[in-house]
Length: 209
Figure 1 (spheres, rainbow, N blue to C red):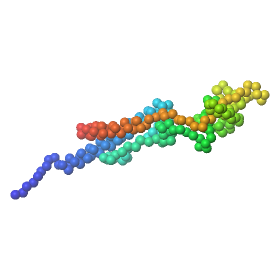
Figure 2 (figure 1 turned 30 degrees about the vertical axis):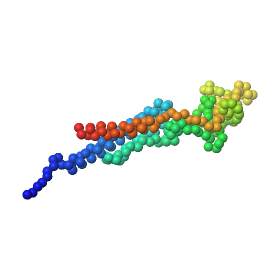
Figure 3 (figure 1 turned 90 degrees about the vertical axis):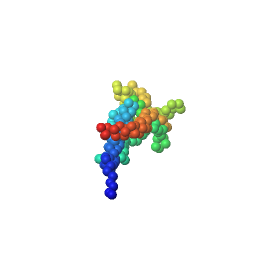
Figure 4 (figure 1 turned 120 degrees about the horizontal axis):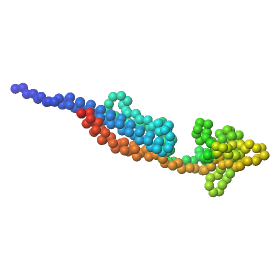
């Protein structure tokens, strides 16, 4: 007597199909979660008033770069990690050399590339020497003996006699400054991580339709 067992459908084929469906579902879920997190971080940065250029520094990539895998992963990062990290943690900033931090006033203007101007750059561009003024209460100052022009910037006086000259505060000097925490990236990251199970199930179901 010859006995045989015929299983329909083919279990090997069914298992292989389920693995393939799982690979597609996990990979799709990772792509979606990574994109959602990138969008959320960019939105936070823009809403915090940090500019679209810094917002666009947030990037995402799904691995493997091609194909699908049950071990798929998504990476979301910034191309300006130090700036993003500072606004995310709100650190205490001190001068590297242990002296003062020079914070420009509106009268200082902007640097050559639109950034924050330094005392050295200000003196070179304006042709004036800055003078230190110590104050017991409140921040000490770097001032210029000149005048304010029509744009509210400190410049040299037009008159050698000193007529119209005034003392203009150019920089505030502080020993340290606490940067305000303007971002909460961990909140969005936790939300994206928590959505993975739902996204995998949804993509698995869609793959069966």
